[in-house]
Image 1 (cartoon, one colour):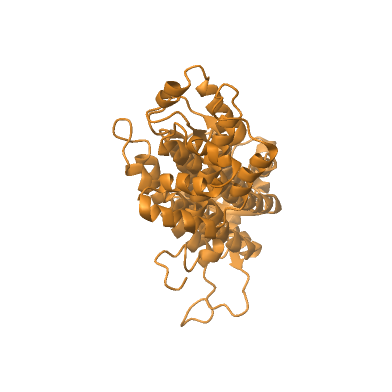
Image 2 (cartoon, helix red, strand yellow):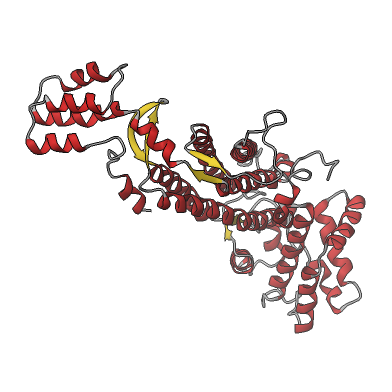
Length: 450
């Protein structure tokens, strides 16, 4: 690990352990083995392919055991075969033939990889890898959303001075601002979950050419559908060339990138709240914030998350832009690129762990937020001029602008101005009772809508 080129495999390896079962070379080979075995079983289960006879219970178990017992050591045997074939998928075929040699299954050896192009095996294997990768990544997204939502509810009544363009603006609540992020993140997670993971098993150019040349009466499209959907839990794509066009992958990577972009926005806002002392951070025994300034507790978790979200999105952006493009019926530019899917997932996972760690260290400085509000009575210019408009008072905006813009305003300044207005008793009383901390509109209700 100390000599790894990528920090995913070195410094951050412990944070992405789950992904080794999803995106490693071993994982790819394991999925290829699974697809090849399931295809052989599907062919044997088709009554209109008599030469590929039905399997006995013992033979079914023997094939299933090959899949179940496929360890990293077994994967190394495939790699040894590949050194000779110089073809990774053909090496899987030869490996399986080797595994059934000498058994009753050997007579079915030529139905392994029957009528398949390599991409039939690869596209389904990559789809399974993405499915597994999402199963590892989405729970972390939910943890982040749940933690932010919990804070949103806890802080729904904590008034906070808002800032637009970095300047003091109408007050809000901390809970409502957090609720906005929860809603945004949830929407993108729903988009990811709604994307159908597609697969094809239709031969060299997507027309079942070879299949029909051997068995013209077989409903190959239905047989492959059962294999893809019932056997693998994917969705069949009937409209392909040699490759599944990867459009669904682009949709997935784009949605994951949007999720990461929103998380980056969240990281930056929390970083800013920490810099404004709205949040403090719990100290951890033994940790050092600065090599020279002993007092510092830096917001490094949110910074780490932001950086890794950026790296993930750089990968996702290239995957999304490149994968749907292939010259004519196929070229191999997608092959090397697809091997990096796990890198985008890896940087995302590192980012998510960092945000979760940072969230766990936050502690609210409510007094600092209250003090900021008490120094910003000018924000009440908005409700006052709005009520003046209601009352038909001439030039309300301009009068409040003259009173507040660039001026030092306090409670007494505001009260004196309101007292001099020709307003109804109810409107005047409501404005006189208003404080910056109490001027938060429907912020609480927005949080409750979560």
